[in-house]
Image 1 (tube, rainbow, N blue to C red):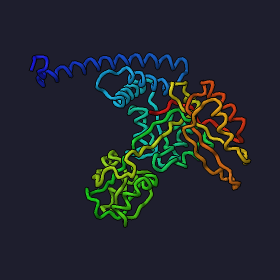
Image 2 (tube, one colour; image 1 turned 135 degrees about the vertical axis):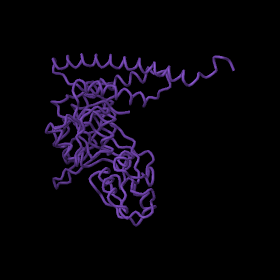
Image 3 (tube, helix red, strand yellow; image 1 turned 30 degrees about the vertical axis):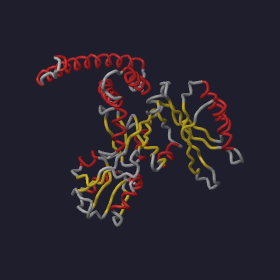
Image 4 (cartoon, rainbow, N blue to C red; image 1 turned 180 degrees about the vertical axis):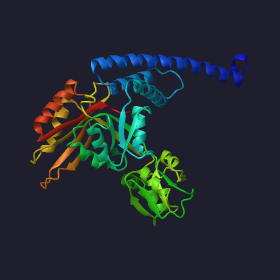
Length: 365
């Protein structure tokens, strides 16, 4: 073995890492000072502290330039935290989500904003909308779609009349665990979780706990909290929720779909943040209804085909008018600043009895 191939001694490697860490610290403080200067300019100009499209462009650019062993996801996570810490020096962001501590909604909030935020846990999706609308939080994070169970209907219904708009999204890989005071599955009499989690794990529960009562609660973290009060109860929640309440993981990853993901929308008032500028990889969300006549729904597709705009999601919800009318929730690929998207939206508006842009924002990977 040549001298060049001989591994360096551990003390030498540790000293080299310590030296690099000192360089990183100096560079991070330099970045923080520059971010502070940017913050002062933003205050004078009255522009928002948080720019999701700018942060998405920064992370994407770094991922493209990366030539080292770090993976794309690691780069995104590291720089999200760096930007979150620098942003908090300008103005800490208050973020509302479905709580308590340990929920997937909290994790989605941290994945999108980083951990340097003021957390505003809420007891329901309705309260997230209310807190954000009232100004108790700058932003809200709400689940809108699950890869197993489909759309979160309550979120879609609240969007209809809410002044909030969508300025970002985050997709979270959801792994459900059976949590209880002991580390055994045997003896569980009640399983507590959010209705969506119960539905996402129904195959496993039917096979392994067919006689256990399935009890719906406001959140998975609440189910974990309750499971900590009774030896025969178990919750379905994240590992973080289990650690929060001192529970064992009796069974790992019990969701029926191994690739189970939930998509969350980031919402705020337009006075907090206007629609983000184009990032190069954007989504535009709409809700609309059409006159109750033959071919009306088919006609919605014509402007999209004419202008070459892709539709990535199409969901319907009853209008509750008693007339068998529906609202349609549509996601389009692209930003309204793009002429083809702008023209398609203009023609769609002319076809609709009701038309509302829910938001335009950088699409998650």
